[in-house]
Length: 193
Image 1: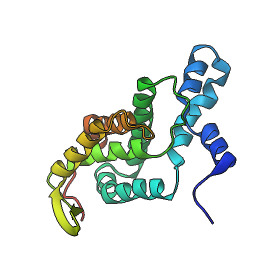
Image 2: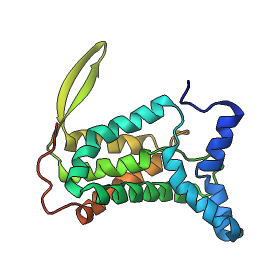
Image 3: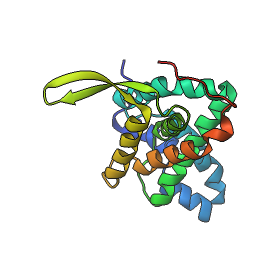
Image 4: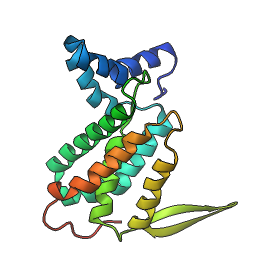
């Protein structure tokens, strides 16, 4: 059994449930009857992925960083924060290229919001990271402030390279940085390893 949707059927699912900026633009400007459907694709697109690696990558980041952010916010606030991060991320990408015909899919923007929140709440938490040095691989602990700052600037560095919604990553991250204090409880406590 394959998790990846390929061929014409897969493309049809991505086009139907993914957020297609051009279709959203048209529905908001001239075809108001299509607006409810196109607005709903902002949500449905967050639950589609372009294959196993795309899904596993997003879930790995969510697993590493999400549990501490959820502890700091509580379950209900975390769900709202996660969804809002995804919406704002989609909006950033949409505003960058409102007439793109390429469907936006994936939870990367929402997960990026979690990363921004983690940076504010736990800047000095140490994150175990694989470090590749030529042919050697080493596990090192890097403070979140260093790791996530590098991650953010990599998103900026790759702007314009096709196939990835880089502006969605940046938008979600900035949303997380700016709004996390509105969602978190008084004391975030220490990050779990």
